[in-house]
Length: 53
Image: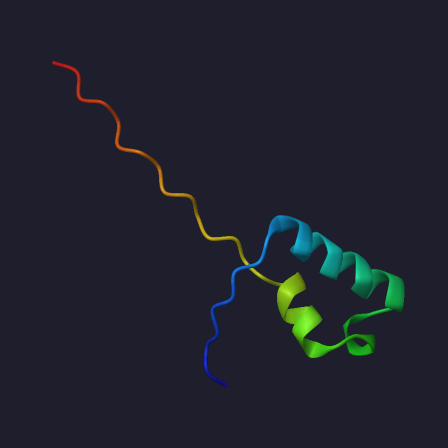
C-alpha cells in the first residue's frame, strides 16, 4: 500500500474515534474512518530562539 498524505483536523480525528466507539469497533466502520482515527499529528515547527549577546 502506498503512503497517502491527507490533511485532517483534530476535530475530524476525534469524530472518527467517536464513530468507531459508537459502532462497536474498527471492523464496523469504513477503513478510511479507521485511517483518520489513527492519524498522527504533524509536529509543530518551533520558531528559532532569539540570540542574546
